[in-house]
Amino acid sequence: MAKKGLGKGLNSLFNEEDIEEVTSEITKSSEGDIKKVRMSLIEPNKKQPRRHFDEEKITALADSIKEHGLIQPIIITPSDNNMYKIVAGERRWRAAKKANLKEIPAVIRKYSEEQVAEIALIENLQREDLNPIEEAIAFQKLINEYGLKQEEAAEKVSKSRTAVTNSLRLLKLEDRVKQMIIDEMISSGHGRALLAIADPELQYTLAMKIFDNKLSVRETEKLIKSMLSEKKERKTADIDPQMVIIYHQLEDRIKSIIGSKVQINAKSNKKGKIEIEYYSEEDLERIVSLLETIK
Image (cartoon, rainbow, N blue to C red; front, side, top):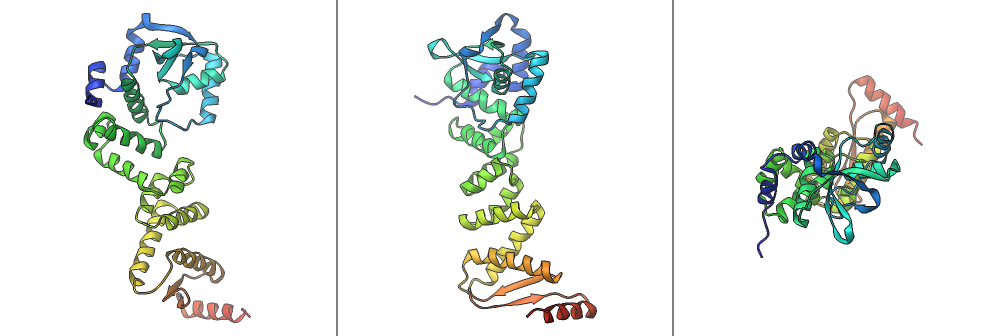
């Protein structure tokens, strides 16, 4: 049986309106469908694309709910065993649970499994609730599981095709690097810069260097450009790619001692030369005097 296209499923339900707008319209126009539902009867959607929920924000929302109640209903659909599955509003449900609510207002609608998955994907993408890796995975699902082209996926969430393409590229990163983006140790901009590094181990080592040294995206791009340039110059030499990172770390250490830019030019893993820049005769004398103190 042919798989339904995502666009067709949503269009038949929502007349091509944005999910966020549709959620609001359902809430406004379906008063009869808003019911108080016991929390114990509601379960999260296992196919929810969002995997990380900010606990601080959940707690803040829970405090607000304790004071004002849950103003916007969640959307649920009948599930197995007389339960209800969350279609939209899991963050609100989590906060309500934290606030110890026994029941919450909900809009009840009958959706197929496919429709639930579709709505969850697009709602999260439109509201920008996902971290960069979750967002990339969501785009990948829209394209692979629902047969959309990149242009169509971009149109569904009001983004440019370039934004979707750049998002999908992040999935090519080494797994530990992707986790660093999820954990906000580095940004998606850093991740895109790291895609220029083909070696997975070197990519991860560089990611750690970015984090440890708090490098900006621009500084990262400059570092990688320098590394790739050096690699090209050394292509006839037998140099371990990992040594390139070590050389840069050593350059930073020597620079912090001498106070001038330092470059290590390796001809092999055992041979090479160190170049130290000076900017005046006085600066040269300063460096020489400093080196003379080293014994």
